[in-house]
Image 1: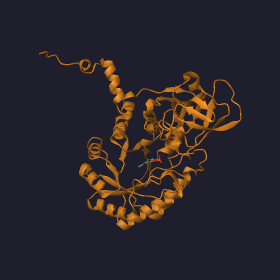
Image 2: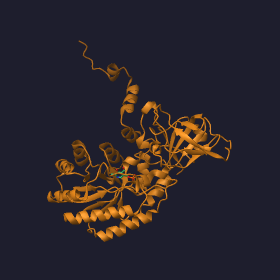
Image 3: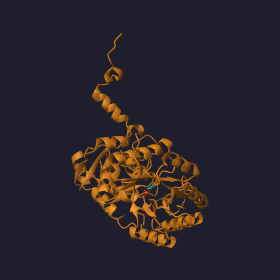
Image 4: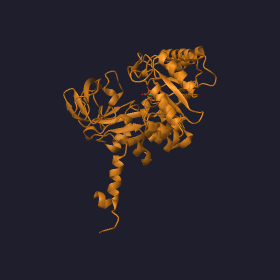
Length: 413
Ligand SMILES: Cc1ncc(COP(=O)(O)O)c(C=O)c1O
């Protein structure tokens, strides 16, 4: 009998180097991002990146200056701003926001928890605010990563959190309240959120179990009405009063809008002003921690996708990225972004026309909801800079049809 131990190569047919590559490919992308830690290639501008790379694959560019600017706009938030990691979990984005003072994070999965812990350890605060979590995820988040803030929108989830994470008196459970969401592009209360009466019952239930209770809500993403935040805070105040529970946390969620073309958005100070007035009316306890957890408004302006025209057919453009890649949000007919044609050294004609834009996959749904206005003679090989793509872009990419936009660079300093 041959007793020698089988090597990895014997078992798999791959050399150690090849095996490592196979394993890397099989790892979830967040895990890969954490492990890579490689600095991004830096270019002065989009034009400089195109001139040097002449890219035939999409290139996603991240501007640290825009991230710092967005982080600064939350300095006057009347509480503690967290960043919603799901919106763009690239380590460069997280690192830049952290250095700009955003040191707390809203995490939705164990993979995000590990990512933040791996990058910042205990120096970062983590809030596990997905209202539906597995028991192992709660247990690991609590035992291994020390997370003490959780969100739920039903008694079953509250019981789960208590079973898996109770044990010290610093546990806080926030009850997610449903909001109308009518003023937002993306309503986030059809899946999660309790009605006021149920929420009051849950607050009492949490308090009776000797645990600190709070309220959270999300007014919907890209919320164009600052008053929506005030209405939700007032509703939270009524729920707390009805339950006769002193809130330990009030989390006003994300939803602050990005300045996309065509969206008439109010300044951040109007949103914060509405929140301050509403919180005063409600009379929160002095010890209540006020949180917000923006995603889009912190990262949208920092991202640009450079795409190339693969084919033109009449007024249809077929480009190398689409709704299964970083342009996922542009499937929505109301989503507009600034676009600019870039062609090597040739001045494009001033006259623009509207083009229907299709992504690279074979799926008929791989089409943008709104046309791009581009110079009439746009043609194969031209590049298009699609701006304000920092939110829900890198995190929504798929490998569908074998396309995966994975060339990422930084822009400026
Ligand atoms: C619980 C929670 N918090 C925060 C956010 C971030 O929202 P936004 O990107 O609209 O700021 C989301 C988005 O889905 C969310 O579900």
